[in-house]
Length: 127
Image (cartoon, rainbow, N blue to C red):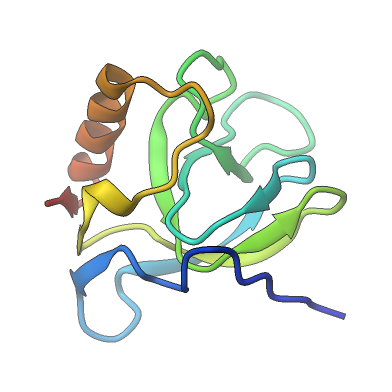
């Protein structure tokens, strides 16, 4: 059974506009242990070797598993505390509201700027 989790922020609340159809979005897997995530959470993709390679977790600037680079924005909330879950993300060709994005605890303003630069390289432009 799949349970959608609606957090404090509604699905896709951060989007200003996006490409036609579903070109801006992808289906990805959020790694187990990521916790409860709200729509608009900035994510990094796990690139280090291991069972979770290719999965996503919250952006973590001090990490060395790939999640230190922002790679997507979570489209809808989820609970990945115990199990990995499949979710939709904004992956490209989208304008977003930077001030409503959800950041992991402790992410500093300079780190946010770095993440927004990485997202811009993917065509996710923060306004």
